[in-house]
Image (cartoon, rainbow, N blue to C red; front, side):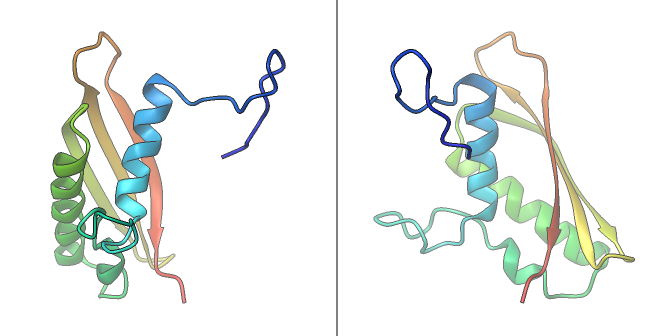
Length: 119
C-alpha cells in the first residue's frame, strides 16, 4: 500500500475494481484466523502448512485451504484454478490463483506470489 495522495483533493487514492479484488484475495490468504476483530474465522490457515515438508501432499493441503477460504469470503470471484508448486531449492511454494470477476466483462485474472515460512 502506497498511501499516495490524490493531487486534486489531497485525499488517499482509493483502490478500485480488479486491484481491490486482488488485494482482498491476498488479504484472505495471508490473514490468520483470529486476527480480524469480530470475525474470528476469517482468513486461511496456510501458515501452519508452510512448516511441513515441501511435497505434493502439503501442496494439496495449501490449495484446498486457499480454495475454501476464497470461496467462503470473496463472493465477487469464481475461482478457476489454484496451484501451489513446490520449490525445493528455496523451501517455498509458488502460488498461482486464477479467477473470474463475477458480473463483469473483465478478462480472467491471475495472482502469483511465493509462500515461504518465516521464523
